Image (cartoon, rainbow, N blue to C red; front, top):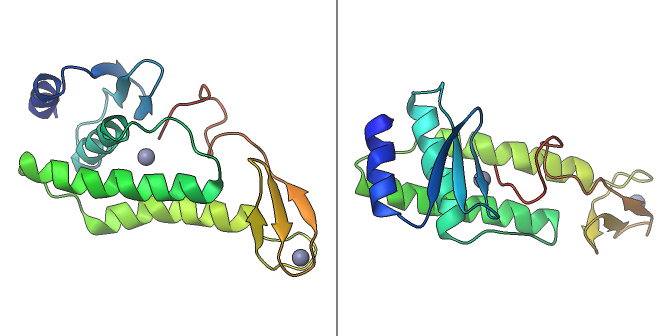
Length: 153
Ligand SMILES: [Zn+2]
Ligand SMILES: [Zn+2]
């Protein structure tokens, strides 16, 4: 991963790469944080994925569904970018990552009254299309409550 890191730093001089304990993109810092203890395929793919959030300029999203769409687009560009470095990102890995988001979205959008799926109005409110129950979901970032607002996985 060290070689790739060097190449990426060289090819994307506007973005800072910071050794850390997790992988994420920080729009405030214009920095890709990476887990320096990891050095396998998954780590390489994560590094490219986070970089793509940066290249695509991902900052905020309004709804859970939009977050999922941005994750899909970050993986799509990651696949293309990886090609330039002769790296192939495993499609199953991508789908596994996206499934985590899909499961989360599914759980949040399920009506507590009737179990149908709701539509998200504002950031934290859903309304059931079937029984019109309105419920609030946590506005915390996807499964990373300890992270600062605005960081991307
Ligand atoms: Zn309902
Ligand atoms: Zn992501």
